[in-house]
Each structure stands twice: as structure tokens, then as C-alpha cells.
Length: 185
Image 1 (cartoon, helix red, strand yellow):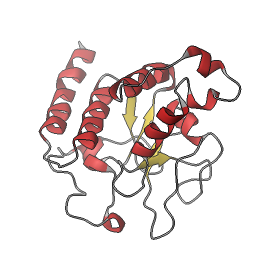
Image 2 (cartoon, one colour; image 1 turned 180 degrees about the vertical axis):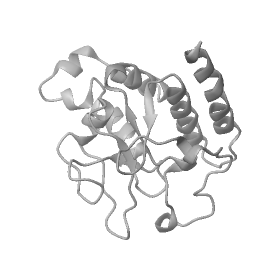
Image 3 (cartoon, helix red, strand yellow; image 1 turned 45 degrees about the horizontal axis):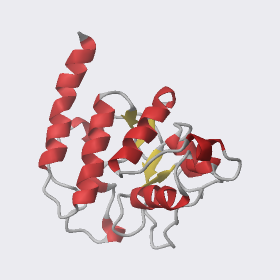
């Protein structure tokens, strides 16, 4: 019964995401998928430091808070996301759902490769598309893996891989006028 209540209570978040007015269909689709993944327990919303917290501070988010703002003025990722972490035990589900939304295929042989393992079974081009679309580059979704040194540090090797596996959260980080970090392994 508690799980059913959580699903019913989370339905409003998914419905709000579906109803959000935005010119970016791709970001809206990502927002809806993240809301769904949060409702079913595959991801957990967190703040920029990686600490669990309610999405939107517990308030409904009906309009993208970034709407009408310049890139340097935003204080969250698309749709009001501060961050999220993948539940490690459900990382394979997350990757399957996220890749499927982008119409990408995961290869077990590539995942086992010593040279391509960082891409978790995706083709290099697909891996770059997934990481770039999630990133804080201008006109992208706005989330990056939280580096081991915290929000002010730079990414580490395989930081995207670690985030997709649930070893570190994806968090909002504004470039603050500096060169925006390009996604890497």
C-alpha cells in the first residue's frame, strides 16, 4: 500500500512535467522521463551538493524556472532540477530507460570492452550525445556529474560513467562565465 500511495502521489509530478509549456520538446521529454524515474524509485532528487531533497522544494513546478533568462542567469537545470542520483542497484534500469528514450541500443560486448567500457555499452557517438544533452553547455539540460572535490571542483576521469552508475550524482552547476565544461568520459 505505501508504494501505491507513492506512485499515486508522484503522478502529479509527471503530469506537471507533461503539461509544462516550453519550446524545447527534447528537454521536456527528458524532464518527464526523470519525473517518472523518480516516481518509480530509480532516481532520487538532490541538491547541488548531492544531498537528497524534494523536487521543487516540495512545491509544484508548472513553468520552467529558466524561461526567459540568459544562460548566466539561471539557477537550476531545465524544469527546476537541482540534481539527482541514480539508485546504484537500479543503474542498469536507468541506463536502459535513458538510452531507450534517446532510441539508442546498449551492447554487452561494448560494455565489457577495456577501451569502450566507460560508455556502458553505447556507441561512442551515442555516449557523447547522452552526456552533451545532459550537460550545462548553453541550451542543454543543465546537469553535470558532481566531482569528488565538491561543486567547485572540476570533473574527474570517468565522472559521467560514475554518475550513470549511481556512484556520484548529477547536479546543476553554472559555468559562472568560465568555459563551460565539455562532457568527457
